[in-house]
Image: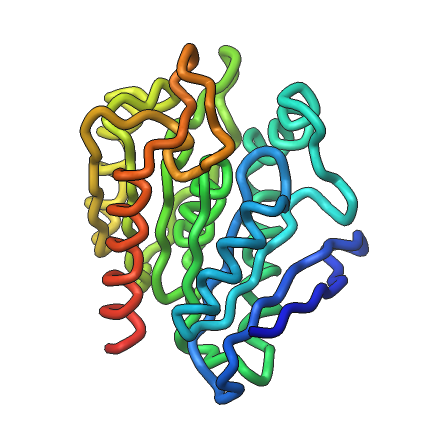
Length: 244
């Protein structure tokens, strides 16, 4: 595969994306990879490479801006919180990345999907909620709630006539997502007539796809069996969505 970085602009600010192309250089579907709260790190770029190994174009998006990678959880919160609370801004950034991907000459603009992890999962769900023409979205251990630290996010009403499909891959023991969050998500997308599905993995916590996650005390750690099952579900989902 071939990799390259690209600088693109949103609202006059620079962002740094990461392309991963399969060997076959014919026009094909593409999948955006939205990073977790630390920023576009090696994990996000590796997932873009894994997407390319499936035969799609992978693009690791930058939601924070060029050079903004957190060194610790405190810095990650400072970078994430403005986007968590301002969903208009979050949608603008993730939608701009989608438009960039659609314009690439090697991408079938009618077959662009997105995956995201943790905060990135929230981001790709907001991508779908915006009503933009994304084909399929997969959220791994996504943040599903709209409240944090006693404050409620400024959300955007879900668009009407959403055509894209959604797969949510969730750990049953995820401490960051409440039953109320799940119920609200399911109700909202059902009322909007979105084609959605949700896989819930038993004995599985938050961050279960990340081999670098080891915080068992706070319920954030890697669980390889659930990670493998979730990735397989994603592969099957994209096979269905891009094949249609």
